[in-house]
Image (cartoon, rainbow, N blue to C red; front, side, top):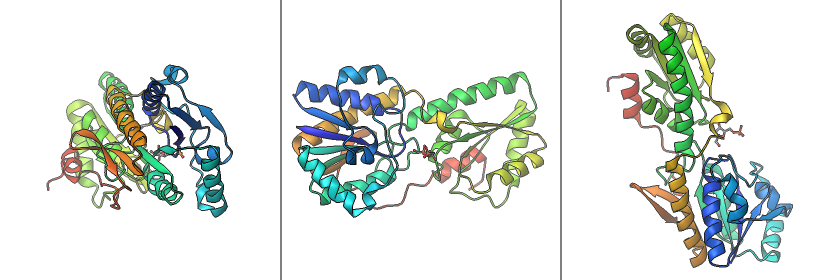
Length: 320
Ligand code: F6P
């Protein structure tokens, strides 16, 4: 079996671990893994590298991806789709293993299906915003990275009191990442793009009370909260303390893969390899009801799951 491996969209911690396990399985069974050096544009340019466990091993514990990714939607061009078909045939690829987030996993598998190429998709994004799977590879690591930063904020907050801290997470337009972090870190308030704030007072009271009781207050929010500058300035003004801001930025995406993500990578590698070997035409690895599973067919055509409203209210002390 000769498999083409493509990483598309934002990278995520755990991709390298998964590649390592996959390469191990391929080597044991005499199969070949060929990686694209640059997502789909890399395939069209025929920039390939042979993947082996030996070459991936040093990167296993690192975030990012040894295989460079791309966000370039090259297949929207029909000529490129023809070129892809020709390359897949000429290079004699039997199937494609595709790493990607919601966008890539929605957009690319139907095209590969149309080209008659079997495909296994792996949901990789720190945002945890892929319908059909309760978690995505990289999410746990991105939470862990944030805890590291928040622990530092708390330490200084304890030593020098009277501070109002905010921590901005990645997550794009989806608040799942910020919500999970706020919950795990015990933040005093959380703001996510999905839930607009119509009345700032309950948030102000929550933060003020934290400041009075503990000497510091912690707000966690998602990068793309609408009007965030204005909102944060207004909250700080009403809380009566200057805001001390931390933005995790892309460092959060490139963090070290956690134990949970490494286990997920191992399980998904096993399921993905089995799907490739047995010739399942289209499948996506998922996490459902506490275990790893293989979803046959396209991702469910449902909206991105919204952050849990009950958790949101719990963190913010909002009465239902
Ligand atoms: O891959 C998801 C993500 O990390 C989001 O959390 C973030 O908004 C976005 O990608 C950043 O994208 P880029 O790396 O293109 O700036």
